[in-house]
Length: 123
Image (cartoon, rainbow, N blue to C red; front, side):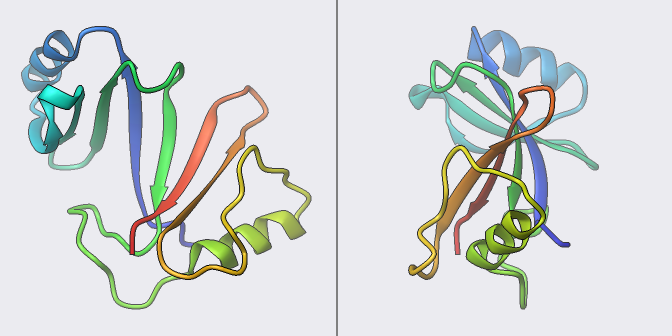
Protein backbone atom coordinates (compact mmCIF):
# COMPACT_ATOMS: atom_id res chain seq x y z
CA UNK A 1 0.00 0.00 0.00
CA UNK A 2 1.40 3.41 -0.97
CA UNK A 3 0.68 5.88 1.83
CA UNK A 4 2.48 8.75 0.08
CA UNK A 5 5.41 10.87 1.17
CA UNK A 6 6.73 10.14 4.68
CA UNK A 7 7.97 12.58 7.31
CA UNK A 8 8.32 12.77 11.06
CA UNK A 9 6.50 15.61 12.81
CA UNK A 10 8.39 16.52 15.98
CA UNK A 11 6.78 18.20 18.99
CA UNK A 12 9.59 20.58 19.97
CA UNK A 13 10.06 22.78 23.04
CA UNK A 14 12.07 25.55 21.33
CA UNK A 15 11.68 25.84 17.57
CA UNK A 16 14.76 28.08 17.17
CA UNK A 17 16.99 25.63 19.06
CA UNK A 18 15.57 22.68 17.11
CA UNK A 19 16.03 24.49 13.80
CA UNK A 20 19.67 25.26 14.63
CA UNK A 21 20.28 21.65 15.68
CA UNK A 22 18.80 20.13 12.52
CA UNK A 23 20.60 22.66 10.31
CA UNK A 24 23.86 21.30 11.77
CA UNK A 25 22.72 17.85 10.60
CA UNK A 26 22.31 19.19 7.06
CA UNK A 27 18.58 19.97 7.02
CA UNK A 28 17.33 23.16 5.36
CA UNK A 29 14.02 24.94 5.83
CA UNK A 30 11.63 23.81 3.12
CA UNK A 31 8.39 25.39 4.31
CA UNK A 32 6.43 26.67 7.25
CA UNK A 33 6.33 29.85 9.31
CA UNK A 34 8.66 30.21 12.29
CA UNK A 35 6.38 33.02 13.59
CA UNK A 36 3.57 30.46 13.70
CA UNK A 37 5.85 27.95 15.47
CA UNK A 38 6.17 25.41 12.67
CA UNK A 39 8.81 24.60 10.06
CA UNK A 40 9.28 21.83 7.53
CA UNK A 41 12.92 20.89 7.03
CA UNK A 42 14.47 18.66 4.42
CA UNK A 43 17.74 16.84 3.92
CA UNK A 44 18.61 14.99 0.74
CA UNK A 45 16.87 11.86 2.05
CA UNK A 46 14.49 12.90 4.86
CA UNK A 47 11.73 15.36 5.76
CA UNK A 48 10.92 16.48 9.29
CA UNK A 49 8.41 18.94 10.65
CA UNK A 50 9.15 21.01 13.75
CA UNK A 51 6.03 22.01 15.67
CA UNK A 52 6.20 24.02 18.89
CA UNK A 53 3.12 23.93 21.09
CA UNK A 54 0.86 22.25 18.52
CA UNK A 55 0.71 18.68 19.82
CA UNK A 56 2.07 16.61 22.69
CA UNK A 57 3.84 13.73 20.94
CA UNK A 58 5.89 13.14 17.84
CA UNK A 59 3.86 11.94 14.86
CA UNK A 60 4.69 9.69 11.92
CA UNK A 61 3.13 11.44 8.93
CA UNK A 62 2.17 10.11 5.51
CA UNK A 63 0.83 12.34 2.71
CA UNK A 64 -1.07 10.50 -0.03
CA UNK A 65 -0.86 12.34 -3.35
CA UNK A 66 2.39 14.14 -2.49
CA UNK A 67 5.98 13.32 -3.32
CA UNK A 68 8.96 14.12 -1.07
CA UNK A 69 8.99 17.71 -2.36
CA UNK A 70 5.31 18.29 -1.40
CA UNK A 71 4.36 18.24 -5.07
CA UNK A 72 1.25 16.44 -6.31
CA UNK A 73 1.85 12.98 -7.74
CA UNK A 74 -0.10 11.48 -10.60
CA UNK A 75 -2.59 8.88 -9.52
CA UNK A 76 -2.68 7.89 -5.85
CA UNK A 77 -4.87 6.04 -3.38
CA UNK A 78 -7.38 8.44 -1.82
CA UNK A 79 -7.38 8.78 1.98
CA UNK A 80 -10.87 7.27 2.17
CA UNK A 81 -9.75 4.19 0.23
CA UNK A 82 -6.66 3.82 2.42
CA UNK A 83 -8.75 4.16 5.56
CA UNK A 84 -11.27 1.56 4.34
CA UNK A 85 -8.49 -0.89 3.50
CA UNK A 86 -6.81 -0.43 6.87
CA UNK A 87 -10.13 -0.81 8.71
CA UNK A 88 -10.73 -4.09 6.86
CA UNK A 89 -7.51 -5.44 8.42
CA UNK A 90 -8.89 -4.79 11.90
CA UNK A 91 -7.10 -1.53 12.64
CA UNK A 92 -9.02 1.07 14.63
CA UNK A 93 -8.71 4.82 14.28
CA UNK A 94 -8.44 7.69 16.72
CA UNK A 95 -9.84 10.06 14.09
CA UNK A 96 -11.39 9.14 10.76
CA UNK A 97 -11.70 10.92 7.42
CA UNK A 98 -15.27 11.55 6.27
CA UNK A 99 -15.92 8.55 4.02
CA UNK A 100 -18.49 10.49 1.99
CA UNK A 101 -16.12 13.39 1.27
CA UNK A 102 -13.62 14.04 -1.49
CA UNK A 103 -10.31 15.84 -1.72
CA UNK A 104 -8.31 16.73 1.40
CA UNK A 105 -8.83 14.64 4.50
CA UNK A 106 -6.98 12.92 7.30
CA UNK A 107 -7.14 10.07 9.76
CA UNK A 108 -5.04 9.03 12.74
CA UNK A 109 -4.29 5.75 14.41
CA UNK A 110 -1.89 4.51 17.06
CA UNK A 111 0.77 1.87 16.63
CA UNK A 112 1.16 -0.81 19.34
CA UNK A 113 3.48 1.48 21.33
CA UNK A 114 1.13 4.46 21.26
CA UNK A 115 2.93 6.37 18.51
CA UNK A 116 0.55 8.56 16.52
CA UNK A 117 0.34 7.87 12.79
CA UNK A 118 -1.24 10.65 10.73
CA UNK A 119 -2.33 10.01 7.16
CA UNK A 120 -2.93 13.51 5.83
CA UNK A 121 -4.08 14.08 2.26
CA UNK A 122 -3.78 17.69 1.01
CA UNK A 123 -5.06 17.22 -2.55
